[in-house]
Image 1 (cartoon, rainbow, N blue to C red):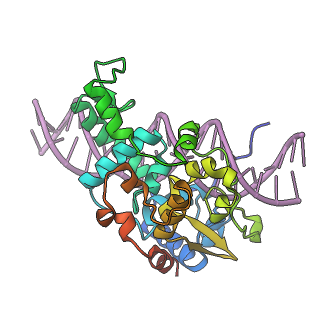
Image 2: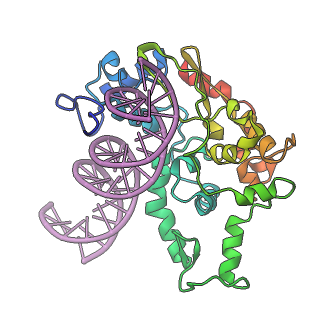
Image 3: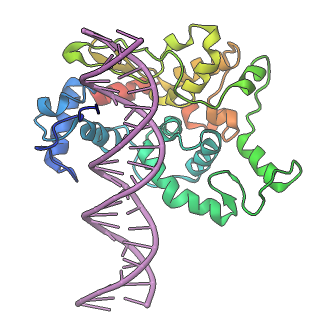
Length: 278
DNA sequence: AATGTATCCAACCGCATGTCA
DNA sequence: GTGACATGCGGTTGGATACAT
């Protein structure tokens, strides 16, 4: 027995969205907030599948999306994050405010792959092409280290090194206070509940790499967000054994210093996030 | 100007996962 | 424990546009 389709597709529009459809979706979400994508199309008067609505909103209509070309800084950050996370586009997008996983994925496939290849670097392995084995003294290794070196020091280092490279599939991310109206549930985001158990530390590391900048929680029927600075504090605080001066991943990787990192500069993203909902 | 080719990116699809009854 | 359902993710597709011939 297969799963039933997510929606009745017979009478659904497909393909490019019209301005009218966009407007209906934006109006509805402004009024009611995100969530419950299955019932949203009908409620909003759209002849679209819920998944399609979600995608359109997440990748195109969200007001906090950054438009325009990727900067050199973003390029380098994507490369470094990809060397750490692989094709975990949503996690990578979580560290690039205003960019979507789809956008980064497309950009990777159309630009960065080519860029790396032109540098003689295999975009999949982040190693020099023509060198199949790792030599600790080689340039190749320098590149790998340059990409992967995280400088994790202190008591947590050992646990971190032992962590499996599983990014998302484990853990107790049952954080959402579900708004059970319309039998809607939500899933997948990380909250402070995830940080309550010290034994979950490694899991929390995995979960926190991505969504720091856009970590939502449901409160009653309205969605709010953790501001990125707070998310970074929580993430870093757990990561570095409760130190309060923890920094975000960008800084940790060494791409930025605190003063030049966008994530660290944003002190209160909540204002931005909420204003787009209201 | 017409045609062919390359590139970009929005959207789709299938599957994995989490939640709930 | 199990199945149905909702959502999210990553790979892929195909139409639009840019560029080359």
